[in-house]
Amino acid sequence: MPAPKREKPLVHLVIPKWGGTGIHQTFGHRMPPMALLVLAAHARRAGWEPRVIDQNYQKIPDETPDLACLTVWTSIAPQAYRLADAYRAKGVPVVLGGVHASLIPIEALRHCDSVVSGEADTIMGTVLADAAAGNLQRLYKGSFQDMEAVPMNHEWIDILKKWPIYRYAPLNTLQTTRGCRFNCDFCSVIRINGRGSRHSSTDRILEEIRVLKKAGQHLGEFAYVFFLDDDLAADLDFCGSLSEAILSSGVKVRWGAQASIGLARNTELLAMATRSGLRTMFIGFEGIDRDALVECNKKNRPGEYGELVAKVHKAGAGIEGGFIFGFDSQGPDCFEETARFVDNINVDVAHFSILTPYPGTATYARMLADDRITTFDWKRYNMYSCVFEPAQMTAEQLETGLATAYRTFYSGSRRLARFRRNFKGRETVFHLALSNANQNYAHRYKNPHVSPEPGYEAAKEDISALMAASQAPAQEALNVAFLKAKVATT
Ligand code: B12
Ligand code: SF4
Image (tube, rainbow, N blue to C red; front, side, top):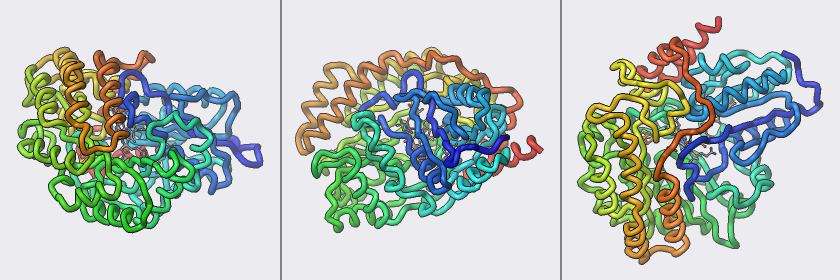
């Protein structure tokens, strides 16, 4: 592998285009690629010039970089691999990382020079030094490190600033926590970021909010920041400290977060969070009956949903709820029933999806062991296609049922009724934003579809190699996947 000839070597940092239906099409979810911005900061520290490319909005520039780094999620793995092959055909060395490449490095290695497994913050300097010396290794191992190892946003905000301000909604995002203390079977997060939460300090978060208020998306004093954390309420003490810190700092910010409904059980904490600016919550309810929740190891209590949603509304915040179909306890009548239930408990926006056995998860291990997975074409792993044999219905019933749930929940009359009944006690701008998300879901999810781009059918040996990582305890999944790849490459 040749060493770069430029004095300041150039690295392309790319996220491939999402294909087909997806949450990225909805107002409030069109977010910038944080992984690449963080990697750009690492590249600068190592003396490289980073070019961050979000293929959803930008073409790959007509230039030959010294290195290409691509982030790979399961649903975009086919595009990522094609792009990686194209770079390599031009003689550009390629590094792959991100959730999919980390959990199935054996497959990713077929399309690149190196795979970085897991969080790259402590290893990226070495990767870039090796690339600069023309000496890339096949595998690099990241670690569950302290959040202080992640560069702060002042190191990359200039990149975001150069892009059109309206491209993302929201543009202002921050990740303050990695990992989660829960252990839901279908979740990739605990596999790549581990169990238990690692937080940034509140001082650091306040500083990053100030940067976004100055250089990010803002209208005078008004700024909205979305915390990418997978569950801000997994650690209620942290949630309390953050709210308190924002309040006592005098920094005026409106914020949203993914959080479990447990936050609403604590009236005092909820009040403090909304006083500090909490306006929107994405809550993974996942199921409306105990059997489904027990099946996926999700610690929710459906009997209290209605009361807790009302508490959040009373405090002045809106809720987008995530609901999954396809659990073994569900039959073909679950779709209308769920959509009606969700409307009755007054969730503002609903995101319905299909249970998906993502590589490396406990759900994958269970379904593979039972020989129920029907396709390993990763482009179908988008949460709107059925890739396994459901227990009490056909795959087709599950897919059409998903569309029924969207049509029922987002019927014109229900949208209008929702708009009218939830107007009071809420800041108008957020009421309009939630209404906008309602319109997006109503129109774009009537007939969920997969990407028209070619897919990528995983090789048999890679599928079975993945079993060991999927069966491992969440905290160990990355290690097991890494070791398998190490053995295969030596
Ligand atoms: C924000 C987010 C989104 C945003 C993404 C915006 C964007 N442009 O990136 C939006 C809302 C658009 C989104 C969409 C979806 N998402 Co999402 N999302 C997340 C979330 C919460 C945070 C990602 C993030 O930015 N983290 C912050 C960065 C800094 O961390 P990071 O990505 O881990 O990056 C670090 C390392 O992984 C590594 N790294 C990453 N990439 C690379 C590349 C290289 C070369 C190297 C060296 C290192 C490296 O280094 C980075 C620095 O430490 C994750 C959960 C999570 N904790 O990761 C889910 C997650 C990635 N999403 C997930 C899913 C399923 C989806 C959807 C399919 C949902 C849907 N039904 O539509 C869609 C995808 C759309 C589609 N059609 O395919 C899954 C992916 C599972 C999988 N196996 O692929 C995750 C893991 C959530 C989960 N519960 O399992 N999502
Ligand atoms: S609460 Fe959310 S982030 Fe945590 S394990 Fe469950 S699905 Fe994953």
